[in-house]
Amino acid sequence: MSEALLRVSQLAVRYGDLVGVADVSFAVGEGEVVALLGANGAGKTTTLNALAGLVRPAGGEISWRGERIDGAPAHAIVARGIALSPEGWRLFVQQTVEQNLRLGAAALKERARFGPLLERVFSLFPRLAERRRQNAGTLSGGERQMLAVGRALMSDPKLLMLDEPSLGLAPAVVDAMYETLGQLRAEGLTLLIAEQSMELALEIADRAAVLQTGRTVLSGTAKEIAENPDLHRAYLGAAL
Amino acid sequence: MRVSLRAALVLAAILLAIAPVLSGNAFYQRIAALVVLAAISASAWNVIGGYGGQVSFGHSVYFGIGGYAALLSFTKLGLPPIAGAPLGMLASLLLSAIVGLPSFRLRGHYFSMATIAIAALAELLVTNWGWAGGAIGLMGPATPRSPADLLFRSALPYYAIFLVVLAVLLALTWWMQRSRMGFYLRAISSGERAAESLGVPIRRTKLYALFLSGAFTALAGSLYAVMIGFIDPDSGFGILVSVNMVVMAALGGAGTLFGPLAGAIILVPLEETTNAVLGGGGSGAAYVAYGIIIMLLARFSPGGLAQWVPRPSAEKRVRRAA
Image (cartoon, rainbow over all chains, first blue to last red; front, side, top):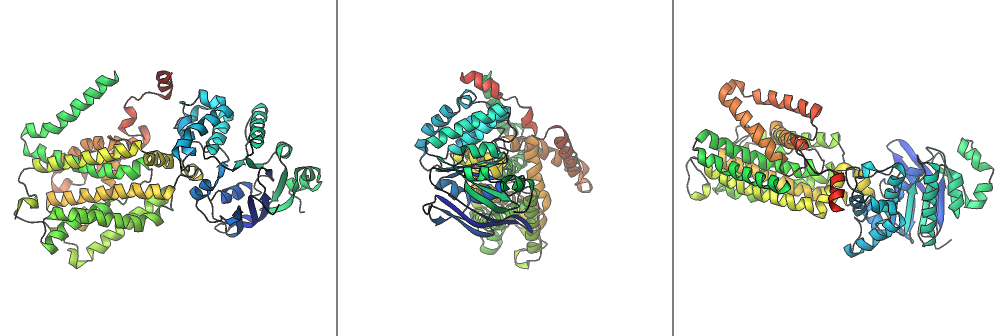
């Protein structure tokens, strides 16, 4: 694990006087799938936003391939190969599916790569190809999630971060989404998945970290975490 | 259908462009020149305020800089006022860089408030700055010393000059609209956070838009000073100067190419006519009308008049592409 792709140590984020996360540490190795678990408000989204450069950490370190990236602006982080599919999708609902995907390629240096990347997203989500000229606002929940993931993939990331990919979706749609994530993993993409629903995430993950009120309280392999009796207590808010 | 609509638009544009020449009426010619001048500043505002969704209520600061640059070059350096225009544009770029970067950290209403504060500060500074004319303001040349002073008895030459500047600005805006920058700007306008998370260089994009917007607003200020031959803190930096730009763009349709021009075509004659009919005592009447227009827009047509122009729906576009 010394060769971690991403390493987060003692990350702290504050919003004014409010503490977003206080002490989060975990690492993600190349090609791994890591689940970031925790109840609502545990600090999963804040952690991902800090990794994406959307909020500045107040303390701690984030390193990517051994280099510090905390405090770097979002566009520099995307350019390094870290993409975020945000909670609630944050689509441009007035723009078409294809325009949304085009914006996902904003950080791409060589424009020639846009075409092949678009084809890849369309083969991953054929539904998006069918709806490419439709406004994103007309899509169903499942299609929106596909578009959010597809848009993040348009920057050709090494690490894809997903914030609650199952939130608000029908079970069948969630299963299909996780199947696609499994496919991406098989292609060698590294995934960091923040999830409230731990069963799903632990099924696909190699390792997991559990957050509670802004701190990492448990971490280990997915199997260890799944079998840890403290897991459910952490979700229910018991002190560990 | 589309072709004939375009032809009708071109015809209407030509008619509008030559109507003041044909009319031979000095009052109408003056209004026509003022319409185009207002359209320049409203279209310039539209670049950052409309396309970028960064609603500035302080664009008078650029207008004032342009106006003062023109008349300061005349009073202090003896140059023709128009020679101050590039200086004003340069100063506006500098100010955009100094002021834009920190204020762009603010979003929504907070950004608007910051822009108001900056313009108010500028007005206060100039009012108390004796060298720049203080509260009295500055005068342009009384009689033309050379053709370069651009002093004309008729409003028609101004109308022609303004029309050229407006055409250049609209061409630049059109080009920007289709470029990567326009694409980013619209993304920022519809979801700044989302755009940022995708790697859209937010601050750089907004700053470039402000450069374009501020420079042309400053140019509008210089042209105003050249035509009117007078500028004071209120007519240069006053809040109503900014409000005019916002209302015109909003009425016609913010974030559309021709929206601000349409707004100017409606509002400037309204203001000039109320001023002419009601005289000095009624000079505030236009602003009462503005207030009503803002309320009606907010209630019935937040997208401005452009909202009523039929556009092919996404569905139709798909059908056409299929």
